Length: 377
Image (cartoon, rainbow, N blue to C red; front, side, top):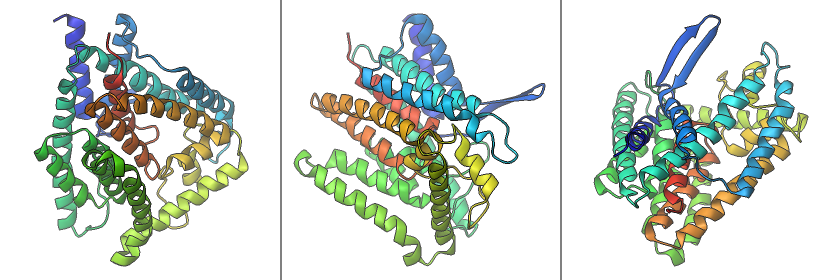
């Protein structure tokens, strides 16, 4: 096996084992600059170099290209607006480069191309094996963290996992869409236990969607999944009151506060938004109604609408719809391709209520799906 193939496999394996851990990073102080790179993003960065040198870059459709070019152009036009927030420096261009542009280049184009190379002979089970191994490790970490949280009396609340993530629920949100791809019954059971203990309602909804997609007959799948998703979103709103949990009610109120702030931002600059990364800075500078948390917008449309306005959101919709049609066409080919399509849908269902829009926990799996679905020569 050639060295480039060995390196490609090593990068894919490393990325899939480290993708859930957003705080596992390499950090260093370089003069007045502080460098911090999550390990998974470092894999994507290395993949970008490898794919560029060896010609492995994944192809991107015209619709997807136009959509992302629109979003990036809007981000460039609006980056200066967020710089006017109290106590905030002009870092909109830096955030645009580090988040949407890097996620697109590093994960969607480079990592997907590397994945395709490692599976060029049709051996897609190799990548799924590493995905399953990473999911089992992640589930084990989440179960241990959840047990410790429950023993500490934080039954319905979140808890950070030092050095890995500032909120253990991010692991559950990462794991949920994978249930459409993981075939091992033991791995599925482990992931379901981890998601259940996390008390992440977003992850519950996505997990049910992913399982229904692969377990139900195709003729009834659509209506059942649609009704289940709507019922889940309703339950997500009222469950805190049924459980009479002050912590969960506070979390729900905080989400409402985040939505209010995103709406305020959208109304102020409806066409191009406030620039990449401005949502968190706006939260910090204006203070949420219920607690000072500085949390990012919970939901892709709240995130994009506040930071990129109508034009940027339309760009994202065009790009995502182009990918959706790609996976839908492939889904007619085999059961495995249908599972890829289901995972893609579950991944984007996640985005409706989560903060994963420009996170490695979303883009690593998206890059994997794109690589696995690419046509083989």
